[in-house]
Image (cartoon, rainbow over all chains, first blue to last red; front, top):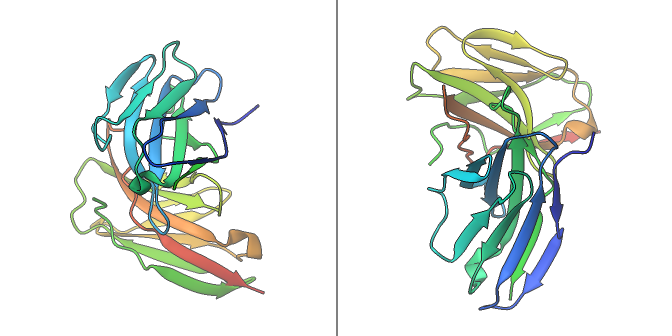
Length: 114
Length: 110
């Protein structure tokens, strides 16, 4: 079956603009995670959804970052007033209720803020 | 912050066995040890997980000594396609959010 997909694969924007990054998890997976990865670093946790609700958003760096998952499937990560420091690869992962400790990652969206 | 310590990089050659050791100096009683692999331009991929002793699957083996202060990921007879970054993590029972460090960049040479 299809894995986790993310769109767009690359996004270039200007400082101050608003961006939306989309994640399509594996069908049937109830848990969804967003991470951010900077060059040479491991992924950094941002937010975790169980179904439609955010079960843990402790990793969001500030209130410019927001994520939704209105129907418990697709999720959108939204970044307002982007800053150059937001440039990174944004990764999405999903897991099933039966095997929540095994996360399947998507290829990521590379965000570049000029 | 990552709680584990592992080498930044390693080099090997095709056909060799590679062992990557990770330190878990402050591992909690309920923590599992998990390893992920990440290829360039891809997200991390779960490889193996264990609590103690030895675990083996089709990809790798994981050795955890009795004191659980370290773990060793063993890749038998590596090929060029095993070139990747390998992360060791500690995952608390009941927590599904792994904390990644910088990982070990393994380069396999012809």
